[in-house]
Amino acid sequence: MTMDKTGRDDPRSDGARYAVLVTGAELVEDARTLLADSGVRVIYADGYASSAELADLARTEAIDGLLVRQGKIDAGVIGASPRLKVIAKHGSGVDNIDLAAASSRGIPVLRALAANAQSVAELAVTLSITLMKDVGRLDAAVKDGEWPKTKYVGRDLGGAVFGVVGFGEIGRRAAALARGLGMRPLAYDPIAEPGLTPDGTVVVRELDEVLRQADVVSLHCPLTDETRHLMNAERLSRMKPDAFLVNTARGAVVDEIALVTALRAGTIAGAALDSFEEEPPRADHPLWSQPNVLATPHVAGASRSALRNMAVQSASGIIGVLQGKGYDERSCANKPGSQAA
Image (tube, rainbow, N blue to C red; front, side, top):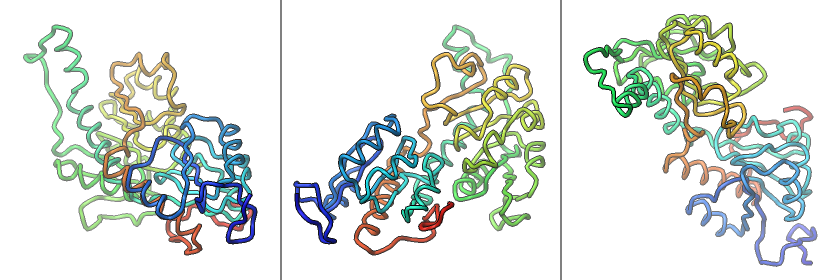
């Protein structure tokens, strides 16, 4: 056993200066090279490993940093290695990380701000178009031997109201893309300045106003105590019966049981979901029996550029902390050194 430069026992014998645990798939090459050139040995964990398994691995490898792609990062994982100095999220959502536990240990939790914003916005608008243009239903009909050409009457995107719930970087980009298609963006955000933005989006302070007017309600808010099951039975009932719900945010923002009920009753016309309360969702999920549901496997932020941006930004944040250079305060999701996040 050797001693590291801070005088602590260093269990590593491979010459690496630091060890970083990545919870999920391999990082893109640029991020791997950046970490290797900075003396970091990377250990990969299965993205669906339990918290107990992640804690065991963190303890065994005496990790200095944690790069979170998937998995539940609870207090046990955070406290497993006394060397842990920094946690970085391969993305912006940190609802799977115990921020209070990290704060109490003085560990910053860094987000990859805006790294995947364009990719997520693009899928949100793509799903909206697919729903509004009945692509799924028409595709199924043609493949089933039908030819509904003479009976079909479609919707216009031009003039339709594109409702945005959460007007951060992703919501703003989604609104801009929708506006480019001739749609009218209407956004709700409790902290954004209400009124007309310079690029033509109307921002309101009442969620009900968006629900009542929107032809598509696209969710772009983080998962917090306040937004969990934000779209419940009551709020779904306030949408227009010919409107659609699109969720490229966190799965638990939508009450899935209430959504199934609303779809069956015709309360709304359909939904497209990229994330779910439980991932992967079970094979017999009641949503799958609904013909007006589109589903993608939480890949909104998985474009080539987004994956590179998230990985490099996360790796850079970890390296900056481990090398004593600090971090961008804007990216920090918690309050290191406090007892509450």
